[in-house]
Amino acid sequence: MRLVSSSLILVGALLRSAHAEGDALVDSLGPREIAVGEAMRGGATGSTAIGLNPAGLPLTRELVFEGGYGYRFSDAASLIGISACDSTNAAPGCFFYQYAGSSPELGGTTMSRRTHIAGGSFAYPATPRILLGTTIKYFNFKSELMDEPKASGFTFDVGTTIRVTDVVSLGVTGYNLWGEKSPEFARAVGGGLYARPIPNLAFGFDARWKLDGDDHSARYGGGAELFMRSSSGQTGFPLRIGALRDNGLDSTYLSGGLGVTGMKFGIDLAVRHAVTGTDETMLMASLRFFGPRLGATGGGDFAGE
Image 1: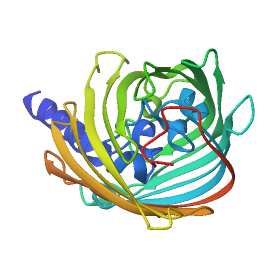
Image 2: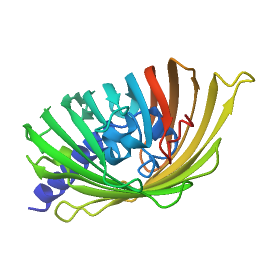
Image 3: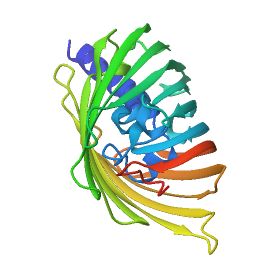
């Protein structure tokens, strides 16, 4: 019995370590969120609103198409996302598709797991200071790991953004609150504070807690962005830095990123590396193309646009 128990504990540990680096709550994030320690719930706009807080979409008024790719070395994960977001009208919204495929190793054997997600994020400004939003997504998950049954179905997120002042805003989001259940789509709640004390400098601090079963692990981080502009004012160069702590994985991460943003396009790069706990190193990049851009309604995001 002691040998059997020890074997089960060992297998369980191997299974957890084989796929602990990511799930749908983190695999959907892009380079701007990753670079600042995932601290954008209070000022998420464009594609950042999809994974963090859909209520932030009305903070800017723009049409933007984005495609991104990320690679996580610890489990050979490829993360792909494409989106189209339009916040120039009275009912801002995004349509998106995301793919996460990884090849973790278990006992010398390479396994595979993949997730397809498609859906839409929509927001409504209830008042100039209170913004509401929701994300509706369909997922299809499949894994060769024994403790991960395949699953598919719809699930829903709900969020709100409160513009306390023109400088400070708060964001709160509930994730996967209703719909099909899956370990990869755990119920969770997150909140964050965003502040832009001067036009070219922004700070944020966020936290997120899981709500499923006995797993109430927390993930919290903070970051900052300095947005520098060219002499003509037509091109910007964001510099980002952040830190993140996950007490469920007992891991600490440092992150950073940079980019270039023009009137018609934007490029963003990010890297995140675990300094304690896991051995995660992740690289991400995205390319944005802008249509009409009518400026911000207040708050804005880390993009400084």
